[in-house]
Length: 479
Image: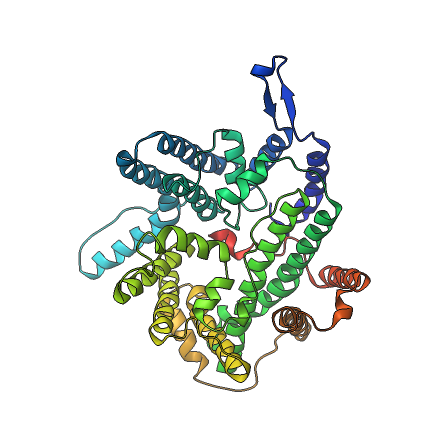
């Protein structure tokens, strides 16, 4: 059940009402010394989260539960043991937690790669692949649970004693499918604290939800109609159309993933929770380094805290620092998918950041025309790398890039109505984010309360006119 499904919009109002009707806490026990606090809202959210996840494939809730139990027990054990015995413990539990992810997501990829390698060498090798579907969101909730385990290991957090509160932290339904990846220190205290309904917070949550729906249903899904058709038969189109499709693909994945993230933030906010915002106008980045401070912020933070810094970060020699950057983005590529295309995509981002750091432009500020040129250059690099992310194989990605520069002409608009909606949606998003990035204090009349409500009504009408519920799954739900 995803945010853009019709059934979600039938079920969520019921979840919202029941959640706020339930008492926040109940004290159980007559004797003061034996009293304990029960949190009915948390228990309801936990049940709702597991039912929400089970709506996809009920059997895979066992994987979610397994990851939860392992990290809960591992953290309790780490919290109780002496320091000299912890390295073996953290390695063992981390490996056990990663095992479902490795098997479900990477077994077939590794098996197929070995088969091709040995077959090419004339050796007979045969090991049947697995026909299992990948548990939705497994990369997200596994990394969130591992982050908690590492935080306990590094003594940044104490082990959570309440299993039910911790289980809600891992399975919280707004974020379990595609993040954002929360840190224990951010979300667990919110789970444990008393929550009261606030009108302003509820309105803000609905606005996030509405804008996220626009990004997904109007921007991403409409672009998808164009991009999917070009990519499926790119040899039949001229290079200009392929280049346009590649640029559109950048807006598609942004609308899709930023849309989901905003919906997750919005749904959580209506229930009194604040989640990290995953995106901060990434297409105005002046470098790839800057881009990863603005794009998928929760994953960038996770990789920095649990891969880059433990390897030495920047507190080492230049060559070692470059290696740390390379490995971090190699891990990012592998995390995104079991395909050589994702690995190359991650390597491209890592290598470009190494070059930026070597040239000293990673933190260099620019203004005026130079800033504009750097923004355009960063967007082009991101788009080229995204071709590898989008295509099913390396040869097809390389051929697509080559074909894009082989012939030119007027780009195919294919479906005039769809093309017009795409341009309109991009223009709306570009106007909104340009103002926020460059002119936050200009056009004051747009901040008027009534103008903002009018904007919401217009966006809602555009969603009704152009969008379609159940029109497609979220791209990052596959990761």
